[in-house]
Amino acid sequence: MVHHLSEKHSLISNWIAEIRDVNIQTDRMRFRRNLERIGEVAAYEMSKLMPSMVKQTTTPLGIHPSKVLAEQPVLATILRAGLPLHQGMLNYFDKADNAFISAYRKHQDNGSFEISIEYLSCPDLNNRVLIVCDPMLATGASMVQTIQAITQHQTPKEIHIVVAIASKKGIETVEAALGKKIPIWCGDIDDSINDKSYIIPGLGDAGDLAFGTKIQS
Image (cartoon, rainbow, N blue to C red; front, side, top):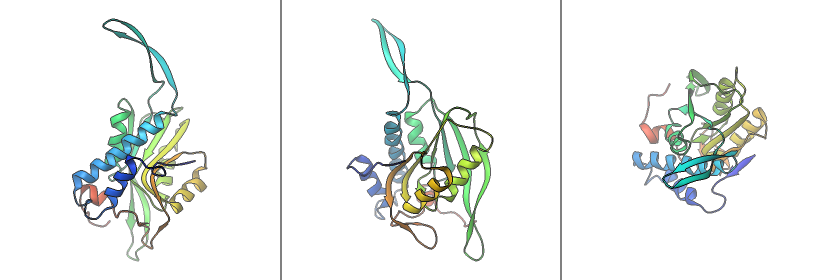
């Protein structure tokens, strides 16, 4: 189930345009803030579908039956690129528990790469709503392996994926591995990836743009 958040004109489409723009994305603070704002709107849209409950709220002048979330989700992100998007979601789901995982492309001398996972910090997920965010869904391999690692010994009742930009191939990979019932919330969707597995036209390397270039591993 794919939710294309830029399909109808919205503020997200403006922020997506900015994180793509080579003349704007050199401003790291603005790049991070735009990812954060995309996460905020995605969280707001998701909250419309989440169960609520009525809580009796005491005001200075009486009692008000207020509608609140029935439960808080667990927010998970892939280090390091996912941190700004994760922060945006945490701004709205501000009482959520959090999970962090390192999943990165470990490159070989021949130019190929494999997904390496070396760190995982995670709360109890059993019978809870798990939301996993990462700016780019390119091949889909890191997202699939991340969710498989997080849920290896636990069973969430729901899993949601949030990305700024997805490729059609990445969506197909996730749906083939995890099923089409997992909602994928996309800021935008691009048609293809290149021979280095970067989304085209995409935006480049989200982690480098947010935090600076790294030595290739």
